[in-house]
Image 1: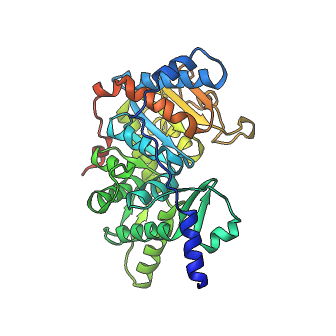
Image 2: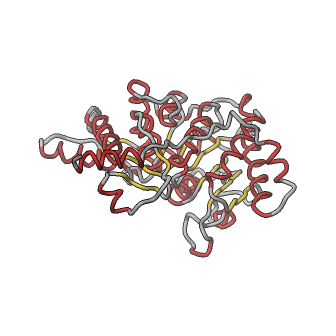
Image 3: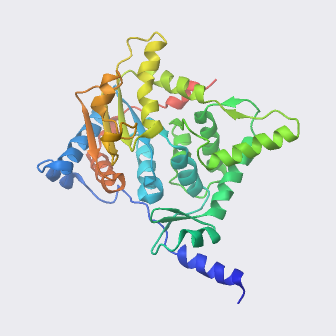
Length: 351
């Protein structure tokens, strides 16, 4: 047996157990959340956070922003986020490029994430072209297919500046035509006119495909497309100005968290002093508040910057993959989403 065959066999062994994404429609977490509300510590924090999210869904004037950082999509929450889009439980998404491209779009193309049932030496994983996220594996060769698909989409576009929202909409359109997974956040967002913003879009597999697009076009002496980060900020602020009341459901922190909160300040700088701070805010994070970073800064701290309301907010210090299924299932089964108006904020940018 050749080394190639040995490596192929070993790779198949390591990539043998797919991550199965949780289905919030299949279980009712309301009794658990109700019971947690009578407890203490993180349990009560989660129950209060879930109550605030339900308030957002009940509030007829509230636009809900889903804000995602971290690897919960790869870890099993991908269908959960898709379900929120499908059932009109969020109106806009702000996320990391990894969440949208390396995880969701990646699976939309038919690829999978795998459970690491054993964690061998990372140099061994590298030799087998397997990437690791803690106890989750990704096939690097499949990830490169994602890179080249992004490149293909870019090559087909008019060479001009695009916000990440505009480019991700093209990704959604591609999945409608060529995708292999019904439950894709990117695909469903396109179909339901829910805009997705990635303020650091090229910090993902998209970056490789877009760099290749620009380099190839430069070699050919042709114009190329680019991602306009300023347009991202302007467009997201436009939504906040038009929306009025708003609520934040934040998983993790980092750039997406700061980006959505800054829309209030940006609106004020643009002369819209009547734009209210975010009325509701929930953040689920494990970050330590003592380092002063964006991921860990509390919602109370954000109030000092004029970004969120101090009255209706809740920090939940927990690993999001373990609590988001409970929060989302509770909200799904309380069914406030059934009477919500669809906002279709993506249409705000139709010309």
